[in-house]
Image 1 (tube, rainbow, N blue to C red):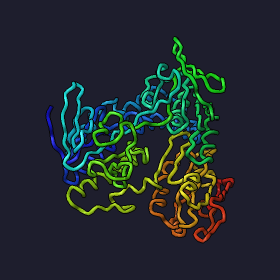
Image 2: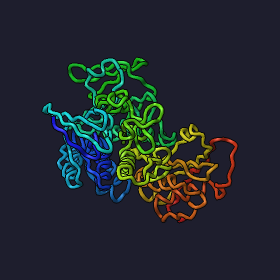
Image 3: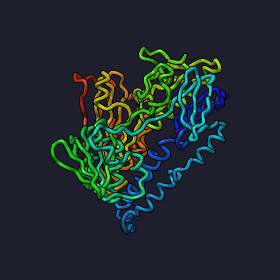
Image 4: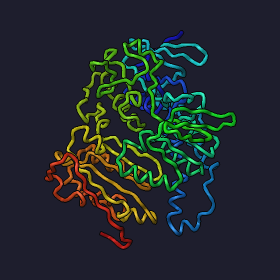
Length: 505
């Protein structure tokens, strides 16, 4: 057993771990990453990048077919083999040579193997050959081990050898029939992808389709799924799953119905990769999420930092916001604050400070790359109400925005914002429709910066773009929004107009 000392030891070499290590090195510290699988993590090989590669060709084909001139030039169907080949390129054929080369260029060391905490800033790494190395951190150990797909306790599920998101994203063949258990983001995105390939898709959604997004967005997606032939079984609950000798999967539902498919994808949530990383050595229970303070230090049940404040948990493993971009945001804050504490610099951990992950609480953007796309930033009506905010929901028909109905014939979509009636700011935004993803950052800036509604009137959107939606939402809300006072905790204002092709309003 050999031992090596670094300023920072990071367990987990996904984008979150990479960013923590990079910020530490930029701040003058030494850093090493411990990784048992591929450097680059889930996002690079089994999630963000290959998923969007699977979805993009179908989106481009739909866009072309929505315009008469382009449609005339389009012949044939989607080339599935070409889509999968492009997916493979984006996943770099599941090789991490490029990511390793980047670590080397950034001055970050890599130790391959499984990392376990020993306490006192020490991490034992066991390699594939059984040999072990102890790495000692002078200033911080960072847990960035991410999550794994959770498998629900359904009789026969394990024996049926189900797909998880990994198998669905990296599949080498397209099944004729695919059943999905779970109506969340993974299930919805894979339903869009596989239905475009011609697969007969059944989505079994006990809690409904995308239960955490606004109802109007769910309704638009449900209508699109119906048009695309995706069967959604809301409220259905699987009680047993069997795979026949010929490979057919049979899913028995609580109501007596049986769903047959060639493969079954389980997408019912994620579980933290903390079961075997030595948490017991630092006084924590293995297998759970790791609670953190605003600077991402792991804390105990009383909110006191463990390991003398030298243990951090960044990304999905802390359960604050299970999104790659939020994990990278946390990583930047964590890397910078580790440097500050190591060098004796001032720590800026006040809300919205450089070393605090404040945006996790109310300014989180997310894009669901379904057909149609859904973008959500900040609160929904439900979460705002739960947080005790007095909000007003304002909605507008996206098809009535010039930039949208120029975008595609037959464009359908809708958008809404939530106004905090007491603060006079926007605290939530949701949009559904083709190519709405690029609306995310404008909403994120408005929410994170707490821009007053009266100032937003002076942010003039270019014409004719989809961003003109912001003007229409403000008009729908009314010019006196800041001074409005309502008696109900949530009220709604909605506009549904018919677009005029010659309108320049």
